[in-house]
Length: 413
Picture (cartoon, rainbow, N blue to C red):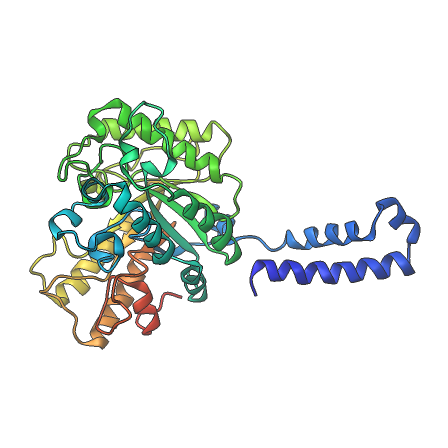
């Protein structure tokens, strides 16, 4: 039963109760209310107050976030959405550079309709229903700066991208996630100028990071974060914002921290207490950096975000090394963290060719150990990612959580 059905049933019950009450017990009082149906609505709203969205409990630390990323949806990545119409007929050399390169190559006339089709089909309400059915309570949604449809600093690079993404984020937060009791954390994956030079930040010049080099880029990201926080502030399913995904390259720590301070100040200045998740530089995901940044109680509802993969930096390691030393390292680093509540925004049981985990029993053991490790994060975690192309066509797809769940390999409860 979804929330709408729940409210309808409660309203009908309340209407019947109020009818009997008014007619048989206290008709004079009902006249003062003017109409007995108003009384039924009042009762329904009182009862509805007990039915709280899970987002509230996650925000205030009563429930741990256990969720999944909606990767490849509003920020396209070729490797995981390769069967999408947006990539058709274009060389891998262009596609693997990301959304900016693809749009520059195709142009709006050929690309806009393709992105509309992709966004309408890659993630639908059926996915959110299935996510909730499996017991997950959070989705993390990568977005790009162009989604806002403006640049107060005067730039026009946002116009390179296909329009129309915002309506899908609206639908997710205001409808699907609301109705199916799933919290939504928005992740700023693609900042103006690119904070990491990768395809998933839609870098205008692949491999180059210009975000921190130009103050107008940083200001645009502040404006974007404030826009998102203001737009969804009063939506029950809105959990918060990941202020910047995987900054690295020429992005420097002083600029990064100054951005965080400004964004936090402007969002909190409106009275908004949503979760704000901050990520260190990608190579600073350890206990030596950011421990004392934005500390409680001067700052509140702050998460510190790490991404933990046992791939990069683990090349050549075998299955036992990955399952034990690798996973134990993740667990130990999380336990030793003493800063703001830890949140593992991305992690996966995808591994290198040296550790294929072809034996299902050993693969399942590895998954169980990795789940136990990330469960040490007070804020919780979101797996990367919900789905990948062809994951319903047979074979093994460790990057696809829906594949792992459907096949009984991922037991997180």
